[in-house]
Length: 111
Image (cartoon, rainbow, N blue to C red; front, side, top):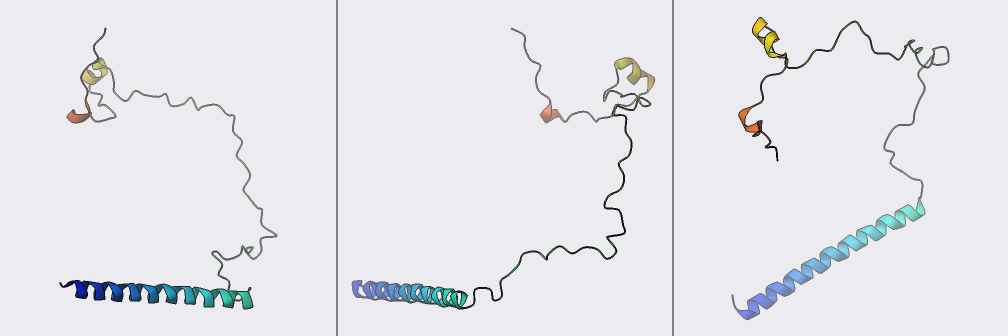
């Protein structure tokens, strides 16, 4: 490409960029002018305003709280995820599957 062609292409690109910037500023100016003239016209609202349900005056607002003692139920005792060796020999299956090989680490050496 000759230097004159590069210069001409650069000027054309700069002219196009200038026109685009001027158009953007013009559109922004027109929009701001319309907002200044009609400040409350066609304002968008993200959510609908809250409306009460028909007949809400006669219904209770929330169900009554159940009476709790605050203690843990003692009917079911907690069980270990991995039963001991005697239980496994008797036929008890572990609650969790064995860890995959890539997630098993080497034992920690004591110092």
